[in-house]
Amino acid sequence: MAYAALDFYGIDELYTHEERMVRDTVRELVTSRVMPSIGKHWSAGTFPHELVAVFGEMGLLGPSLTGYGCAGISPTAYGLICQELERGDSGIRSFASVQSSLVMYPIWAFGSEAQKQKYLPEMAAGRAIGCFGLTEPDFGSNPTGMLTTAKKTAGGYVLNGTKRWITNGSVAHVALVWAKLEGKVHGFLVPTKSKGFTARDIHGKWSLRASVTSELIMEDCEVGEDALLPGVAGMRGPLSCLSQARFGICYGAIGAAMACYDEALSYAKDRVQFSKPIAGYQLVQRKLVDMVSEITKAQLLCLRMGRLKESDKLSPAQISLAKRNNVAMARDIARDARDILGANGVTDEYQCGRHMLNLESVYTYEGTHDIHTLVVGQEITGLAAFDS
Ligand SMILES: Cc1cc2nc3c(=O)[nH]c(=O)nc-3n(C[C@H](O)[C@H](O)[C@H](O)COP(=O)(O)OP(=O)(O)OC[C@H]3O[C@@H](n4cnc5c(N)ncnc54)[C@H](O)[C@@H]3O)c2cc1C
Image (cartoon, rainbow, N blue to C red; front, side):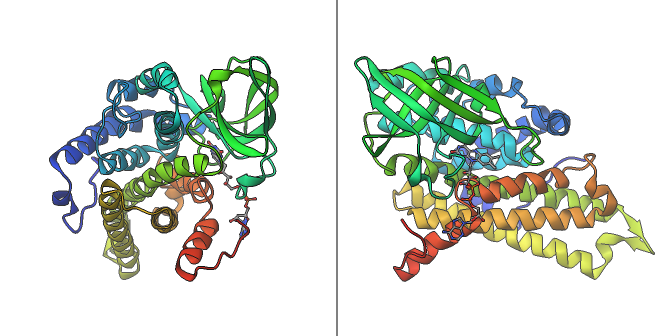
């Protein structure tokens, strides 16, 4: 059954021609290259590595950055890429978010000219992969407490520490590791071939199974002077990258929700119980209408968010509100879609169960749902409910 993307309020006409073109191209790519094999990859717990070069060729990596082989499209177009990729699978979108927003963006924004020349064209083409090491085994929601350290040596720096839950970790060529140098957080571009650097995959996940998640271990890991990101110090560095990535996640969640709604609607129209298709029963219609209502609100929120970003007016708290709303919305819709599919919803023959499990990770990473609640709470009351 062909995918029918929900657009109940004609939001399409509010996008530019370029934004629609980018979205439609990625939509077609997901239909032809992701959908046929994603279920198998997810079940096997493998990352579809073959897509990386394709994304590079199509300009989907670091797409809103300018120069260095990047496409320079609008933030809204970048968001729509995330939406379409996550229609396929949250793990595929996670790969692209990490590459584009968490590694290429900080190199572009805070890197030296030599670092930009070295990494950005290779990463834009998909010939080099990056990962972003912020979280540690004992510091998730509170990364400020990180224990990873960097010490200055005669020829560069030596890093010690462990990062956990790192997307792309073992397939990355370069790890952007956040570490404390003389007590202050700095970013280091660590080639993953460096002596003293090890990446070990985390197995047994029942979420984001088509994405690589690893632990990074640095034991007297030596890097050169040129590893330090010179343009930023303190938590502003990692937090500004997370703002970029969360922006894309807000759109991505809509893609997963649209996929689940589409599947639930077509299933409900086909599935006959008692005297008619289940889509004809009021309780099922209510679930479908709730989905349309929530997806439409999330689409409008993202449209406004994109336009605010384009005029440089978007605040971190506004991104937090959209991440919190849209991911929770998608998670609820995936569950309701699974319910509408009855027993079939628990098999890998259908996609809503895969999205439902993936969205548990999306709900937790890039700031948990509750941490974003506290960020917005602080914004509106002026009172922080957590230690900052
Ligand atoms: C699949 C996957 C991929 C990931 N990829 C990356 C990556 O590429 N790079 C990276 O650096 N990290 C990554 N992460 C880590 C992710 O960002 C963290 O899991 C997240 O920040 C939450 O940290 P935690 O798991 O330690 O949970 P905790 O911080 O221990 O939180 C546990 C619970 O406590 C709640 N909580 C914590 N503090 C408070 C408070 N003050 N008030 C109220 N409630 C609170 C949280 O909301 C949550 O419900 C990934 C995680 C997953 C699952």
